[in-house]
Structures are given as structure tokens and as C-alpha cells.
Image (tube, rainbow, N blue to C red; front, side, top):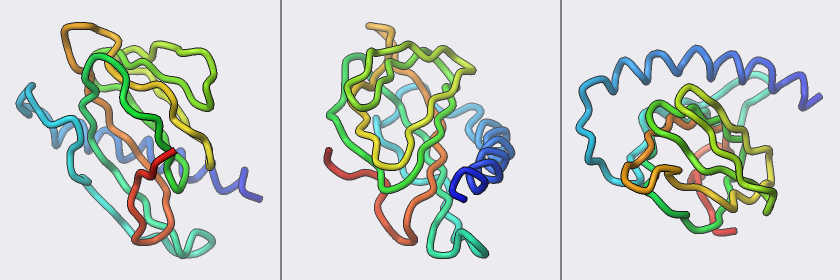
Length: 138
């Protein structure tokens, strides 16, 4: 079942996050809002046809455009606080060290730094169809 496939993905995401954090130590504070992919790996076995992707995002104050992803999303807030909501649900604030999840098909309707004077830094782990872009319009 798809639920049983998510457990190994969550474990894989958790194991990748410390590597990404170490790799980014000393990164400049002023960074583009959208950073390039840190890693993309083709999956095999029951997940053949999908890629695991790791990206770093800097969310600026305010809210970005509504969008969706072609797969599941697991985010980890490295610095700052992030405004987060999917499918027009009530906004919540995700603090440093907190996580958020976007299931397949969800529309990410609220995002941005929760602090009016500072960006937030987030590592985002996605599982998407092989070779696909990671973001699409809502």
C-alpha cells in the first residue's frame, strides 16, 4: 500500500537532513529565495520511476504564490519560522526544528517567513516522478 511506502521515505528523509545541514553550515545569510537542487537520486524497487530530491529554500516575509508539487513533500525548518498551509486550511507557524508535510495532490496555499524582518531557511525532501520539475502552478 502507499501508506507502507511512506514509512521508508520518512526514514530516508530524516537520514538525509543532517547531511544537508552540515553541508550548508557557513552559507551566506542573503540567499536567493529558490535555491538549486542539492541532490536528486533515482529510486528503484517499488519506487522505480520516481526521484528523491533535496532542495534548500529561503522563504522571504509575506506569502508566495499558491503551487503544488508532483509528489510528496517533507520540509524541515533549519532557521526562522515558516507560515504554512495547504488546501486553504488555516495557517500555522512552523518553528525552527519543526516539520511540515504536503501529501500528493495538495495545493501549498500559504508559505513565507513568519518574521517580518528575516527570511526562513528550510530543507525540503520530495519524491517526484523521475525527471520531473519539483513545482507546478496550482
